[in-house]
Structures are given as C-alpha cells and as structure tokens.
Image 1 (cartoon, rainbow, N blue to C red):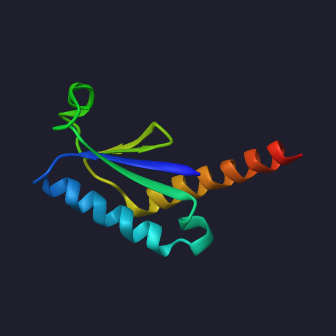
Image 2: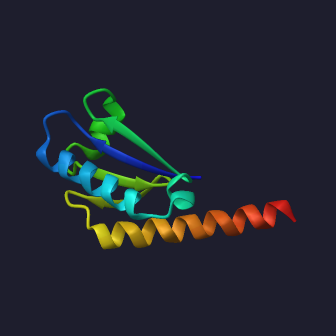
Length: 98
C-alpha cells in the first residue's frame, strides 16, 4: 500500500488544485494500482506540528511520508512517483512472501 498525504488547509486555492491533480492522476491509473493507494488529507489548522513544518509551503504532498512536492503538483511527476512506489511495494511484497 502506498500512502499519499496532502497537507493543506481549508479555503486554500492551491490546495484545491493539488487535490484535483491527485484525483485525476489516481483515476488514470489502472484500477488494481489505484486500489493500492491510500489518500490522506491533513490540515495544518488541525495539527500544530504540521503547521510548524509546512505552513509556508502548502499544499504539500508526501508519498509514504517522504516529501514529493509543495506549492504545485505536476501530474506527470506525480504519476511517475506513484508508479515507482507501487512497483517498490510489489517487489517488497514478493520478497516477503518467498
């Protein structure tokens, strides 16, 4: 499972755009791949630690806890990163099942 985290806040235009890009990219993936992606949204208004880390960079996209992008999310770059993460997950799962 790949976890994609979108960190933003309410009434943030760039956060809305980032969410739309994420939805579009995940929708374009094959169903089996899309089902392996968990999308989590977090608000800097609800979490002081997130606010401290990211307040000036929202929206922020993390993939499996690692920074992928901030301010603007490029669809092609996001797709490539998700596909890479899903391939890594598949390899890890294969090794664990051996």
